[in-house]
Length: 263
Image 1 (cartoon, one colour):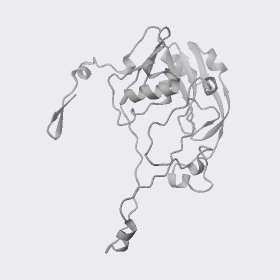
Image 2: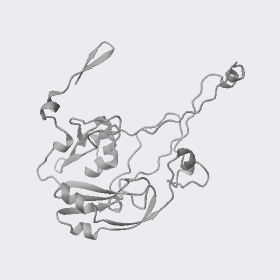
Image 3: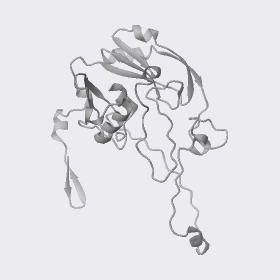
Image 4: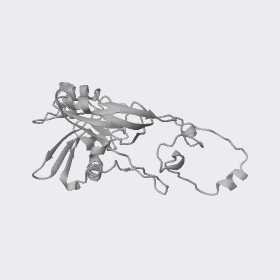
């Protein structure tokens, strides 16, 4: 909890968290609840040659196993909700589960549903995926060079968008300046690392056609809208509840494929 005092913020601890009565997404337990675990790509860029689910489906406690092909025509790709005004943003399809190619380490490939968290996690190791690794670069300047591995076939040169910002007559200002300074600035990567990772619990009322999703969201209204787009479900049929959030730092503003997969 925070109380504003003039220009500063005086913070005091939430007594629920001190006494252990805080409610986080992982604390939720619904009747007949099942558990999901995802098999994620160890490669930053690779073709998926084949996926063998036979052993995972036979594992104790496993209820179902899904791949991206099971979702085709039933859900929509993950939408891009943040667009810089006046740019030429390219938005390639972001599948909830990869079908033909993985494009980053951690890209979801298979979804396991099981009776317990342990059974779901154990079954992940039984999914056998044959990958054909492709080239990858992590340096953004190298990624836009000719001949660099192309992550998306419909985004030439790996350039997501260009955005030109200008004001005044810069050329005239530089031409008449007494001193000119050239400076190269490299911005560091940002990795929000909260104590509570992302999580999701969902229940669906078939008779009413209503979905309730609990997730540690910093932006539950946007979560509802984006889940509506991904799941082909009207917004008024979706309720998003954000309980206590164990840290976010911006990483829990977007809606990810995982929330929609659980839903």
